Length: 68
Image (cartoon, rainbow, N blue to C red; front, side, top):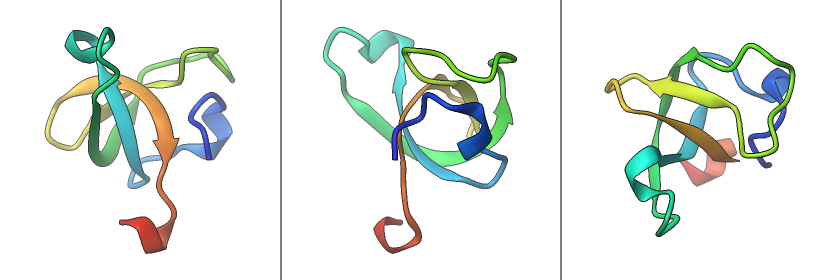
């Protein structure tokens, strides 16, 4: 599932994000959502989140339970 809709993401969701520094390469970082930073219901580049380890980026993929 992609990360463009806020309703699909909540704290505790396992996701893959692209960090600001990795936007050119598209390298993904895996983690667990701590906070949602985008206030709108959707965003074309992905909802911006803060992971539990403090990294901030835009959600590119929401991981299903079996992918974690």
